[in-house]
Image 1 (cartoon, rainbow, N blue to C red):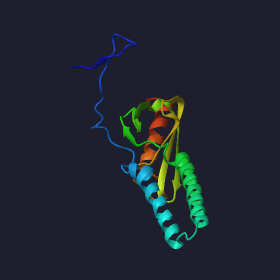
Image 2 (cartoon, one colour):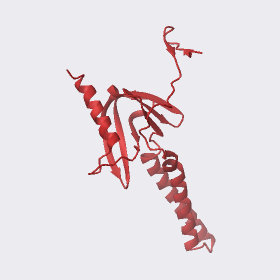
Image 3 (cartoon, rainbow, N blue to C red):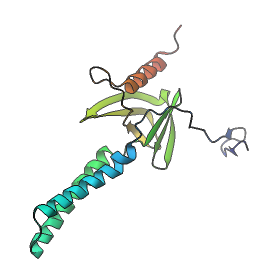
Image 4 (cartoon, rainbow, N blue to C red):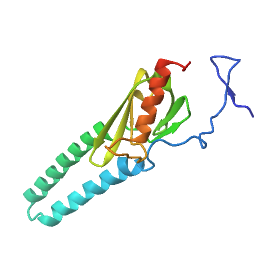
Length: 174
């Protein structure tokens, strides 16, 4: 079976892409960073708060519940802003990147990337790709790259992407 026909063009056949051979640029622990670590942090703080001062009266119980709800809302705000919007997986296809977030997958051409921003938060490097034209996943795509640090806190993956995009902008060497 060759694949299914693209309804936009009867001449073009869309084949499912085998992405198992593509090298992965993103860290492999995104499910931990996005879900497990925040849940464990909240549960740990909740247990510590309750164990530190066991609610004696109904007022204590209500105040503990309200405080934990406020803490949970603050945690959800920061997770929504910083973590949950990040890509789960970024694969390198040479002249394109295959980006997955949840059940959505998008093929991003390097020519569509106008900038690569790198930030260091705590002990994690975050790469943000700014796109010329927004895609299904948004106008900015963020991910944690594999750990490849060099002297001065530079990341090999981010540096390589920046250099490749600069070469594309300049054009082929003569």
